[in-house]
Length: 309
Image (cartoon, rainbow, N blue to C red; front, side):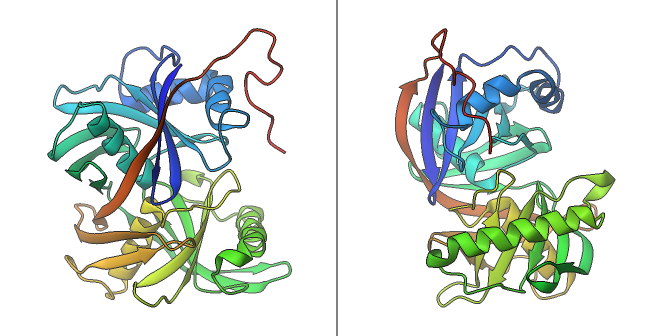
């Protein structure tokens, strides 16, 4: 299996160029559904140890359904499918540029949740115009064991997020274990108390937000796998901007700088969406880190990855 690895502001992406499963024809969403139904072993083998890491997002390139798109892509991690992924979209753009498949300018990329626009600024910097993002519920309060009442918004930015400013401790990289434990508790409590995204969707990401010198905010983001996002989380910050816009705190075109828990940054802005939400644009940097052939030897007991704990 031929892959190219990259990181976007610290968060890894693995683009699968060849050797993935045959998903047939149809929309990218239909092919993503087939991947989810029938190819767990493939997804796990790419993103879990010993070949992957808990923070790894896989990006399976597939032929686009429309000829004006540069590619179709299906994002996934060790837990399952991702509708959209901001850091991986930027990583995909830089990988396609590395391969000589795109040059500077705008390009259409098909994802399971819709077409997004990539803009390549240089060999290491790109923007992605995300899907329409919106807030579903404002000021939801849940009583979390060991933390007490936690209040936040439930919003969509390509994935479902619970966004709160109620912090268990300082947003500092030395507190990763405590922050991870707290956000896992919050996510579990949301599930246990019946809070979901639209259509009963699992709220699989939790964002903790704090003020930050030199940026508009600093965040800690829990990802579906239980790992934390090393980047500032493009879909999570898209969801945040939707909340700020709904409250009249951020106007179309206003810049927003989001810093991650490791200090990396995205630059964002938005315009009004067609359905009452916003269309965010995320700008960040990515670097190719490896080109590799993954091997799957017969008899390898961990050919499909080490099972999740």
